[in-house]
Length: 219
Length: 410
Image 1 (cartoon, chains in turn cyan, red):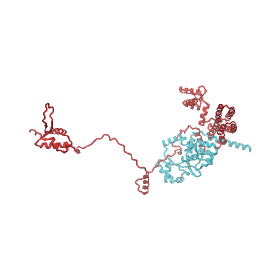
Image 2 (tube, chains in turn green, orange; image 1 turned 180 degrees about the vertical axis):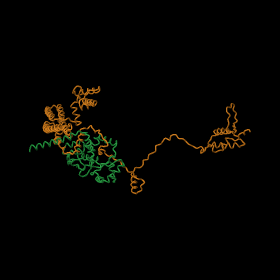
Image 3 (cartoon, one colour; image 1 turned 120 degrees about the vertical axis):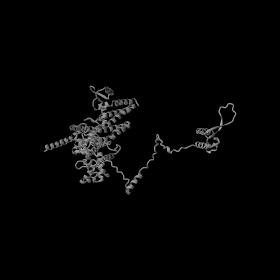
Image 4 (cartoon, one colour; image 1 turned 90 degrees about the vertical axis):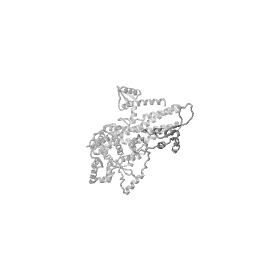
C-alpha cells in the first residue's frame, strides 16, 4: 500500500493518469486497490471511480443524511460551486483553440487561446465579462495575462494541470468527468430546458435534409 | 449645487424611495393595492416614471426601462439596433448652424450650438457601443431571449440585416467626420475637428472590426454546435443558463443514497503527523532540535495579580509562643523581688536600675506597675510630697512603694 496514494485520497484528490500517473498506475493493480479499499473501509470510506475508466477518488462507504444534504446544498448553490468551472471551460470551448473537446488528457495551449481571443472581439468581450469569475484577473491586465489566470484558476480547481510551463500548455485532468457527471445528473432532472441542444440537432437535420434534397433534385 | 442639480437629486431620491415599484414595473405592468402602494404609484406617475397603460395599470417609462435594460444587458427579442443616421443628420444640421453663427459672430449661440453638437456626437458613440453590447449579448447567449429555434433563426436573419445597416451607419460616420473636420479648420473651430476625431474617427476602425466579427459569428453560430459532444453540449447549455439566469443560483433536487457516487465530492482529511519526542534516533532528534530552534521564545507574561480573597488562618495553639514585652517581663521580675523583699521597694528606683525600661516614662511605669501589682495583691503606697496646700484637691505623689502581699488569714 503506497503512502502517497493514501495521502492523495485522504486529501480529496482525484487520481487520474494525467495528474498522478504513478499513483494511478499503482491503483490499476488489483491487489493494491483491494488493500487500499480495505484500509479505507476502516475509516468508513471506499475507493470509487468516475465512470468505468476514470479517475479514482475517495467515496463514502455509506451515504448518510449529512452527505445527501451536502450534495443538495451544492446543487442549490450551483452557481458558486460549479458555475465558475462551467463558465471558464465553456469559454475555452467557444475559443475552439485546437478543436479542443475538453476530455481528460487533452491539451489547451495558452498561446492558441490568446490567438483566438485576439482575432475575435466577441471572445475578447466575453473574456472581459468573465473577469469577475477568474481569480486575480483584472481589466488592466493583458488578454494573455487574464487567459493565464483563467487557466491557473482551473488548475487550482483541479480541472487542468500545467503540462509545460515554457509553451504554456495545460492538460485537462480526469476530474472534469466529475463536473460532467453533475451536469448529466442535472440534465436527467431536466432543470434546464434542452431546447438549445435539440434545436441544433433539428437544424443539422434540416440542413442535411435540405442538402440531400438538393442532391436528389440535381441527380 | 445648482438648482437643476438639486432637482435631479430629488428625482433620483423619489425613484429610490419607490424602488420596489420601479423594479416591479420593469418586469411588467403594476397596479394599485394598499394605500402606501397607491401613494407610490401616484408619486411615480407625477414624475412620469410610470405611464398609464390600462385601467389601474401602469408601465415603466420606456426610456427608463431602456436604461435599466442596458445596465442589466437584458434585451427584448428582435430589439432593433439603434440607428445612428438620425443623430448624424441632427449633428450635421447643428454643425451647419454652428458654422453660420461663427461667421456671423454670435458667440453666445456658438457656445450653445457647440454643446448641442458635442451631445449629439456623444450620443452617436453611445448608440454604437450599445448596439455592440446588444449584439455580443445576443450572440453569446445564442439569442437566449427566445427558446424556439425558428425564432432564433429569424432573429439570426434579422440581426444579419440589422448589422449590415449598422455597418453602413458606422461607415457613414467616416464621411461625416471628414466633412466636419475639413470645414472646422476652414471656419476656425479646430476644437470641433478635435472633438469629432477623438470621439468618432479614432474609434471607427475598432467598431467596424467588432461589427464584422459579430457578423461572422451570426452567420455560423447556430450551426457550429452540431460537432459538439454530448458533454460539451451540456457544458454549453449550463453556461448559457448561468449567463441568462443571473439571479438564480441552482436547483432544489431530490438526492438519495442511490444517486451517482460521482456527485459526492470527497472531503479532504487534514493530516498532521506529530513528532515522537521520545525517539532518540539522531536524525529525528536533529530535526526536532532544529524545529525547536525555529520556534519563537516563550513570551514572558507577568502573572496577573489575583485577589487573594478571604483567608482563614489555621493555627494550632500548642505551637503558639507568647511574646511578652519588656514591661511585662520587668513586672514579673519586680513581683518576684517584691514578694520576698522585707523592705518596701520604690518602683521609681527599681525602674531606674533597669536599662531596658529607659524608654518608658516614669509616669507610665508608675501607672502600669501600680495597677499590675495591686491586681496581684501587693500593697502599694503612694509616696507623697509634703507641701503646704491650703486647698488640697489631689493628693500628689512622686513615687510608689510596694510591699509583699498580706498573707490571707487562715
